[in-house]
Length: 421
Image (cartoon, rainbow, N blue to C red; front, side):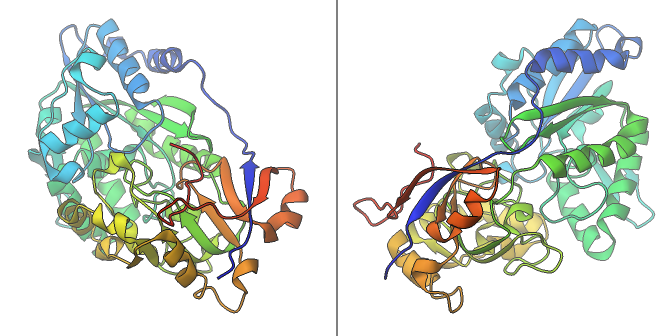
C-alpha cells in the first residue's frame, strides 16, 4: 500500500505563561490573609492529584512553604479517587513520580484510602472524605481547572472535582460515578461540594490553568465561598487556551501514546472529538476523526490503559503493556467500562496502517487526511499528510518545518514517534 508523504508542522497557540511560579503562589495566597485564620501549629492538608499537571511539584512546594510561613503544619494527601490501583502505596508512588515526596516538599506525604462519611445528600448519596484530611485543622484544595473528558457543565474538572472524586478516594469515586448515572453531573458535583465546604474546614483553593504548550498559564487562590463563580470563569479560560488538532476533519489520527498523566481518559476527548460517543464524533464535537490508531502507553501511566477503548486500532506491544487489573479498577470506578476495551491489534505499525486506511471511506490511501501526534497534551509539533499543504500555507498559525518525507519506520516496521524520546 502507498502511504502519503508527511509534513512536520508547528502550531502556534495563544495563551499566557506564569514565569515566577513560587512568587505567584505566594502572592495569590497572601491576598486571602490566611494567617488570620490559621493558628500557630495547626495542621493543613494540601491535595495533590494524579494528572500530569505542569510544574505540579513546584506549585505544591510553594503552597507548603506559604503554610509554613504563617505558622501552619502542612502535609500532603493524594487526592486521586481510584488511581494507583486504588491503593495508598500506588497513589504515593504516583506522586513520587511527579517529584512530590516528603524530602522534596519539606513536609509529610500521608497516603490512605480510608474515608469518613461527613454528610448525606438529599439524593441518598453519602459524602466521603479522606480521613487524614478530615483530621486536619484546615484543607487546601489545589488542582487544575480544565474541560473534563466526560462530564459536561459550567463546572467540569477542577476544584469541585477534587473535593468530589479526589478527596472522596476510591469509595467516594465509586458512589459518585454511580449517582451521576441517575442524576446530572452538575446536580451531584454541586451538592457534594456544598457538603464538603460546609463540613470539612476548607481553607481555600488553588486553581491552576494551563496553556496549549502544557505550561502554567494562571494560578489563582480562591476563597471557599467563591469556588463556584471562579471555577466557572477559569473553565472558560481553560477552554480558550487548550491545545487543539490542526484540522477539524481527520481521516486517520495516529496517537503515539496515551496515559493517565496525559488525560483522565488517556487521550483528551475534547481534542480528539469523542466526548459524547467513544467511537464517533457527534454534532456537538468540534473535531471529527474517523479512525484512531494508538501506538503506545506512557511510562507514567503504569499500565493503566483507560482510553484504549476509544481507538479502533492498536499494535500488539501496546496490548502487552496493559495492566488489566489497574485498568479495570479505574474504568469500573468511573462507571465507563468501554473505555478499557481492547481494540483490534496487529503486530506492527505498518500492518495497522494498512488496515486503518481501509476504514476511512473511499479516499485513496495516498490522499488520506492523516495526523500523527505525540499525545493529546503536546500538540506544538505534529506530522500531517501532504494533502493538507494548501490549507497550512493559508493559515498564519501553522508552519511547515520539514518535509514532505516518506513515513519513517524502524527495522521492526514500527513508526518513528513525532518527538524523539
